[in-house]
Length: 315
Image (tube, rainbow, N blue to C red):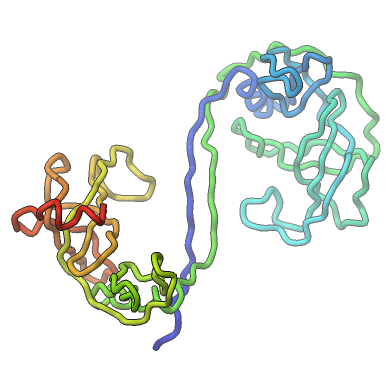
């Protein structure tokens, strides 16, 4: 067998959220080089601000402006910067209690080495050159041994021109995927326009995609069985939200398809038919595009619908 396949894989799910009055004021303040906290019921000033008291759960609205200088309470050295981190050189992660605050803010400290960092050191904010209303408007902290502690924070109305009312929060995971020998054979079969499953030696069921072991009997599967290419829609859903970087118009249908000869349904997109005409029992076949390693979608074959009893165990 050829070498097991590997490929870089990115799982990314950015989402948007609206901001309430407290978070809106905090992020808009950063854009204006102003750091705001919120006063809790016990008088403490919490930075970054929260909308509800961490002790009593009461709603909090009393905003307080704190200083751009502060004191490192604890730290950890990061010897190798990674993609998306605040700095592209080695730096320290620090918790900084800003002057006027009673809690600490996590951010990066630009320092020449770990020997230059210690708890209790004085630091100041280095503002980003371009600010948009995000935590990254604080580019990082920098040492400020000459900065005396500033007076306690003062009340702030939280009012700014053109306030930030929503943000996009990124969520991304980069890793190298290795499918293993079983799924490598499956993927290589797809590249040849074949769908290959594996049969359990005990229960004789054929699983597609194969996993190398029977999920029912727990024994290894090795016998390869070509299934399909046609199959039956067992269940489906109508997708109404367009995915980022996916060039498919909504609405469209994603379905579980029991390929002929398989005992497990796989999922794929259904095309070649209006979304509101897709139904359980619909007979479908794969559609390949030139150079593709897997079917682009499945389309109706024109055959009569399959009888429910023929696929009910695969729903």
